[in-house]
Length: 262
Image (cartoon, rainbow, N blue to C red; front, side, top):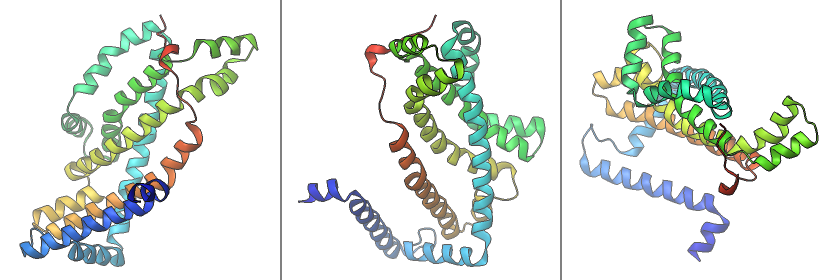
């Protein structure tokens, strides 16, 4: 019966699991009786006060704007690089080492370097976040291009499709699974890095607020802002990403059609 419930009403199972976590959190906080480990009810009350004062919506909005800007920049540049590297072997050889460097460079080092070179500016903050995401997007898209179905490409040539029509009707549908993989992994990475960027060098945003309350050892408000951020991320996942994925990712390229362009 429980298995059938999970298959038919997965949202009920998710809601129950969240309720159980909140109850466990509440119980642990009550038993601890320590301001450094507040129960869920205290954190939720603090979140409600921050919402009522307008502080939480203000800082969350600023953080979301930074996430959107850096994500758009990283996806645009990363997709372009991935397409070029997957399609042309020479481009891949020239840029592969640079991608490996960015992939292995610690995010904190890149953030600090950009702040040192360009100052504590908004442009430096967004660029730092975007550069941390760009290489993973490029690598994912490159692998998608290498896995394109030769037969579909040949069919497009047989029907004399132009470059734009081939890209739109033949290439992009095959790349949808890879683009969504890059989108999901990118957002999960950017959510975290943008908070570090704000904590180190911005005067607003969720990361800045967490840094302020850290200095005050105010764990309640740290958790309130963190929980609000997590809730927003989950809402975006359920309301936007999952429906889009169900709509566009209708099939995946089989391994027998994988290829590497020379």
